[in-house]
Length: 120
Length: 353
Image (cartoon, rainbow over all chains, first blue to last red; front, side, top):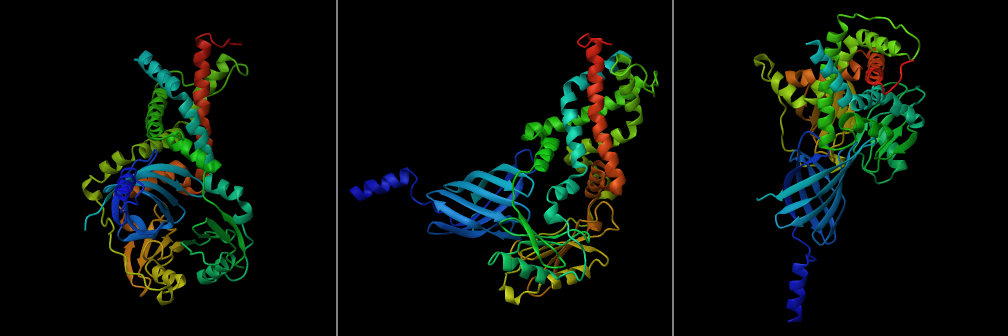
């Protein structure tokens, strides 16, 4: 009974690690930007850490750096060149949403990100 | 009619005057953005040229000694003999002396003064509302310049009379500067308006029948990466890419671990507006060319926007046109301020001497 209650509590409070493994697609638009930028992200959770790759499409992928998972929250970085992207996302069902910070040697911008799980 | 035009000229000045001042002042700074950026990091930007330039592999080895275990994302070879080579790492951008391999310093990412200036110029350092205000203010400025010419025409004032700071002085200054700076101001503001309405401009130009893109580029799956030992070197990638565009200068080498393939950026300096927009992707295992995106295959819309940008920034003919862009950018706020002073004096808010 105690075990069942604990499980129910864990699930309802969202402490259980969400199943974030897989490929996610969507887009982001930097604050004040004109265009939506496509995103294709593959997440490979391993315990509390996260690896995988991200980029605008399957042909252009960059490795995830400093990836971590805390419950249904994920944080990771991607460096494509001058720009570094820092993602702070929350998973709910087949959706990953959150904020993205974009930094270059001269600029810092923010964006909202919305990704959905890509079905195989 | 004249009354209507005068009211339009006045209304634009009052409504968008402050924005025009901000755009002009920030535009003047941005005309020399790369130079100012290098100047503010001069200890890592400038070097004394001499001797044989090192290969990218040798530069990479120098980076590995300084930052062991750190992957190189891209090389940005020096664009002039007295400028350092940049090497992009996850932690920041490292400047290296391409003749000695000396690591000059690391630049981290984040907001800088020039970044704030750029954000102000493009979107008033805010989001979409700021961008929309800039876009429509620029268009309104264009109307203001045209209406100003209409108002100037019967008077044809071309010299400054009256005592310094008198009502006559401000009127003459506004009229004379407005006339003599008309052409560069129209060019600057019109090109700025096109940048603001970029999507609409591209849509329009790409619909001109003979202006369609020849090759819009292709998206292909990147080859599976093998270990680095089985890869061609970045220098070999550069040699293979340069053979596709003889005479071009390497501006960037993206490493295959970051993106999936070698991407070599080539600067064709014979092509003034779109010269930097040549990219050749290579399979890191075989050196096979995967895709070629040359400036010559850009659509007319893209070419037009590149030309428009080069005119607006003053890059079109180098230093002389950058100076024109700087001076013109400073004259725009002067016109907004002198116009406001004329109106304030007429309304009696400021006493005329």
